[in-house]
Length: 116
Image (cartoon, rainbow, N blue to C red; front, top):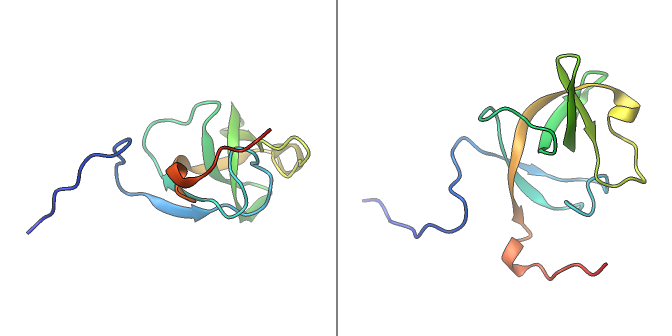
């Protein structure tokens, strides 16, 4: 009844949630329109992880940012685009909802290398 699929890439554990990236704050790592898979729970967040979070001062805003350091029972987050400061510098500490484990759109193998 089941179908066997070959193992391709890292093995992902469920549950995973799909999240669409909007805006340029995580460029060049993630761009507007990229789709990522997020694992809520799992291993503890570490500095450098890309996470999905909610700022305590903006509970209506779900963001994708990079964890910088644990602070005040939450996390201090920054975007990878240094020209945009819509992160903890503007909104303070955030509560992490999950870690980004993979980008699945556009398909990583089909994306041409970006020129610098």
